[in-house]
Length: 334
Image (cartoon, rainbow, N blue to C red; front, side, top):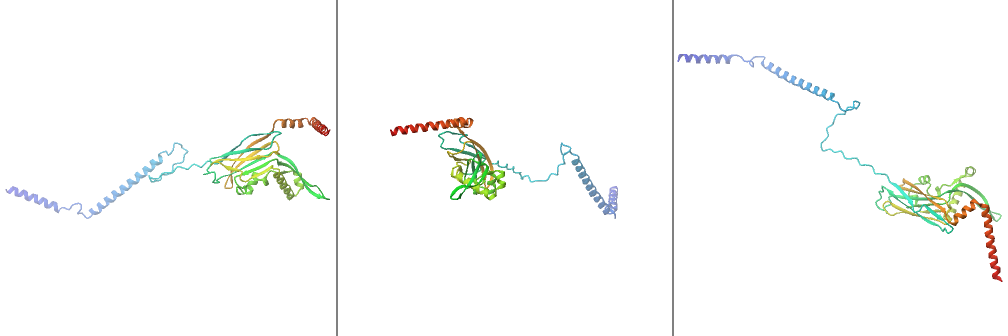
């Protein structure tokens, strides 16, 4: 019993000694040491993060950006919203073009020729016209004959008689000129563009000889040009139809061109122009031939190939018809 009490006292003494002994946190420098340890750990962590970030940048720089060694490095990718979508590019509309043709490529001129008619028709490729009546496009059709030399003389009254006063020789004047439009040409394009395209009587290709042009006054030449237009128009060889072209569909159009009986034989050039809002979009050119046929061709070739024999034959035919008419007249009197 005495031994157990002694043991208990000894244990109590040891516990008291342990409690009285100063620990590490009870020392004066314990708080400072603990703070230093925490700062060192934070510094070490920051240093480790900087080192890892540097190694990551070095690895990205060492990674090849393209298979082509000469290719420039790709720019850094920028973050884009996942919902953003690139809209596809709208392809440009194809340009409008005019295609045209004539109803016949050859017109026969015989001894019974009394004139003819040709139809110029065509279509607008890639048309954007909503309806034939919308007036979205304008079409101009020009049919022009071969140019030929022409001398124009001005007459005047002298002593009560009409005589030739002045003359100008033109090197080339169209033998035939017809222009048909969807509306008045002054409303289709400006005067400069019409002049460049030789559209209209005033812009027809009337070429004066160089020597005559140098010796003549410009105003006088212009007066003779107007006289040519007036005379040709009176003969039906210069024709203008302001509404001679009509659209019969969103892209289809047609025009009828009258060829008079006195039209000179030769080639005709048909030009078709497509306009929109005063600008030229497209043009097309085709040809029509006026050819002599039958007896007309035989007499023409004979007169040009054997002019002397043709003259003798013409006199003989005239004499024979005159003699026959005279004999018939004398018999009727008896």
